Image (cartoon, rainbow, N blue to C red; front, side, top):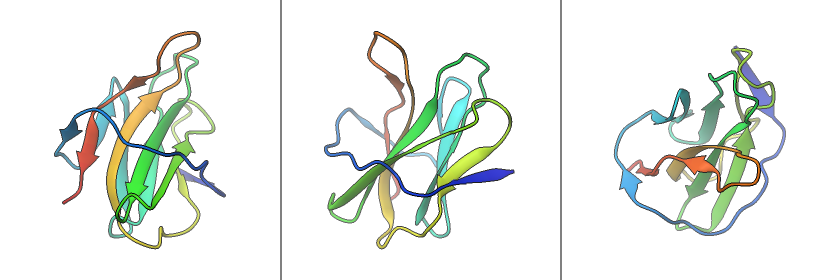
Length: 111
């Protein structure tokens, strides 16, 4: 089952290394893209009370955002309700950690 997020939160910047695989894991949580690289998807698979999220960059870094898994590890994955205007070029899987830096995978490059 895939839940849908109405609008991602806009973010700026890109950092860290870049991985080259289709599904990106951070622990048991993972993200990927669908609809021809136009919709980022996040799946929280850990019952750890930490929100999993995907950060994404599209086009020539002109568009970026964040999609949260809104129901934790209940088995649903979440994505944007619309196709991103240009293909998602980079994404990474993260989880919120209170009072510490968030745990994130490396950036994944789709091209």
